Image (cartoon, rainbow, N blue to C red):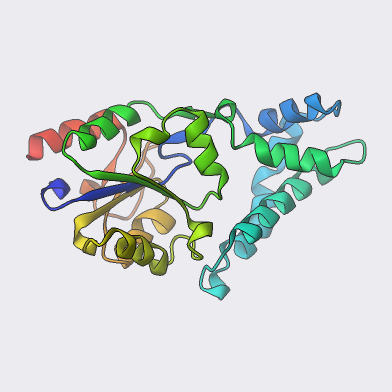
Length: 241
C-alpha cells in the first residue's frame, strides 16, 4: 500500500475516526439533564438509541433528495432525534432549553476523546507537507468541537458537509471539496470508519480511500484499504515508501 506517492491532501471523517464519545450517549444526555434538574436514566436512553436512529435514518440521510442538506436541516434533525430519544424515558415534561443544551453539549471537548495515536498520524502527514482537513457529516458543531479540543490547528480545513449542501456519501460532496482545493481526485485521500458513507462515498468521486476498521469488522473491501490502528497505519506506510 503506497497511497502517499501521489497524495497532496488527506481528509478525515470526525466521529469514530479522529474522535469518539467520552462515555455512552445516555450518560452524556443524563449529565446535561442533571444540570437542568431533570433526572434521566442513562441505561434507558442507551437502550433506545438504535431503534430511534433507525426510525429517522432515511430522513436524515435524505438519499431521495440526493443527500442534499443545510445547517438548518441538520440542526432540526438532531433536535428531532433528541426529542424522540427522550420521549419514553423522561418522567416529566422536557423543556426546549434542555433539548438545545443537549444539542450544544456535543460542541464541547468534554463530550469526546481523541482516538489513540491519531495526532501522531496527523503529524506524520504534516511532515510530508500534506494539506490536512476534516470533512464531516456532523454539522457546524464540529468546528467548535475541534477548537475546544485544541486540535483544530492541526487541520488546514474543517468542513461540515451541511455548509456545502451535500452530505456523504454523495460524490458531489467530495467533488465540491476537490474543486475548492484545485487538486485532481487521484491526489486526494479520505479516511473514515464507515464503509458506505466514507470509503465508497470517496471512491465514487475518484478519491483514494482508507477505512478505519478498529473493531475488525468483516468488510467486503480490499484488506489493503483497511487499518485497525493509526500506529499500524504509520508502520505500513513507512514500509511501503
